[in-house]
Image 1: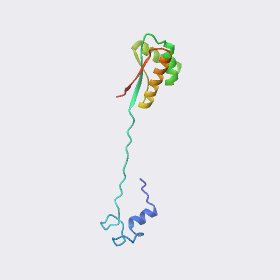
Image 2: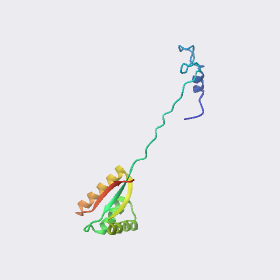
Image 3: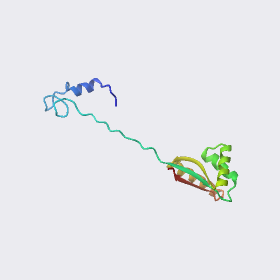
Image 4: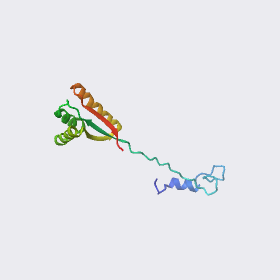
Length: 130
């Protein structure tokens, strides 16, 4: 809200320009002061929920394919992708990234689609971040 009033606002608030009303020419809320109560509704936007996209280990998907997936869909460098792939291989699960719901859902679908087209059983899931 702007704290500086324009000339029009001051004229309206003081009632100087409106003399045709039933209250003797004063604008306002009827209490005789000539001032209206100004209210402002503030909309608070809520941050979107975030979701982790995870790759799950299996014994059949080639490691190089997992690296390719991480580079292509998650914009990881070769080094980062290799590190994540090894983590998935050793720990059973690895974090690809954290995204809003729609982005995470799209990335999971892209990974699963490409894995199926190459006949790999690679699993990719998303879970809500705490």
